[in-house]
Amino acid sequence: MPSVLNGWLVALSLYAFVAFYAMGPGVCVWLALSELMPTRIRSNGMSIALVINQMVSTTLAAIFLPVVGKYGYSTMFFLFVSFTVVYLLTVVFFLPETKGKTLEEIEEHFEAA
Image (cartoon, rainbow, N blue to C red):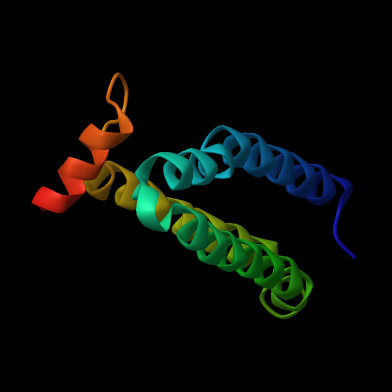
């Protein structure tokens, strides 16, 4: 039986994850999709990307309890951290800065690459 302290640590970790996710990947996925997709394929591209996004979210929700039951809470939180680090590295190294640029300028960036 876990201690009360363990329960509070798990709850606080979940709250922190939700807070940081809401400020980072939760919002940035929508912004990146709407700004970075070329206009000629934006509707189809966003549809596919959002289905993948929902599948990943559903998979994380589905594996949470089995992973916690078999390996413990720390393994699940380290898994969350590793996903977030991969996301952060992707954003830092592969997504261009879009502030102050038109959609056409952003498209030119990807066509040049």
